[in-house]
Length: 302
Image (cartoon, rainbow, N blue to C red; front, side, top):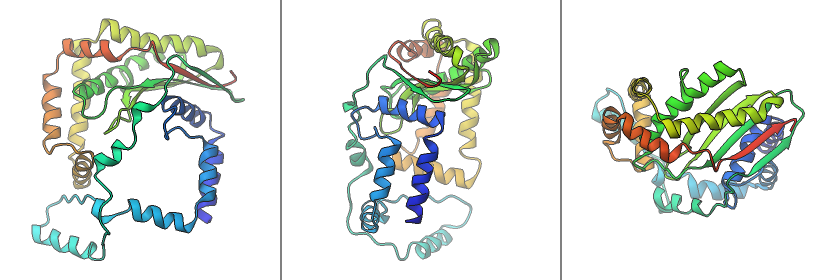
């Protein structure tokens, strides 16, 4: 009951955040008709109804040793690792299996969602700053051949200090903050494209136009060799950081197994990164950097 009360209070506080309200409204439009579409009020009602028996049932279904992945990294000997694992896991047991990760993912059926291209959602909140969000479903999941190139486009368009949206912010002063991504949240399931900005309420229309302009320019004119070189270096640093500590290596191995990635996945990512060309990236930008069907969420004095 104590944890339930804390969670309900957290949901109530979240409803007072214009950023959280905007993100929830965007995701509810992106996943309309799917069980991922839920409100904070839905969550509060669900939490209040939970019983101890519900918790036991959910624990038995999902928190299972036969569904766990154990990843070990370090310099200890094989026998030492084996003894530690046997000692820590000695009292774990299971009662059969509930299916593979792939089967669990198949149950989601994301393609059944009812996204409305160009939808506009205005949510009035008395705030000095307004939140602007643009979004649309992405056709990409983690296994798509264009996923890695699109991650490079993210660095060029949204993610680094030298990104195009950052340059727009510096030139125009329109945004207090701005970001975005193509194929955000992609894993076994398809993700979504989005752009986010905190702006003065009087600048909402202009900010929306300018952000869409950044994507349209990327789609029509492509990138430069300099942008590719810089994005490649940032991406390479991320790959290096993934192996700098034993905890990072263990997490990487565990995630690869959970997502069903081959053991040499990062070798292939590295090869893809080193061999990709400006021409190939520009062709991919033409396919995915299209804001014409994006929906809009505006939160604030709107």
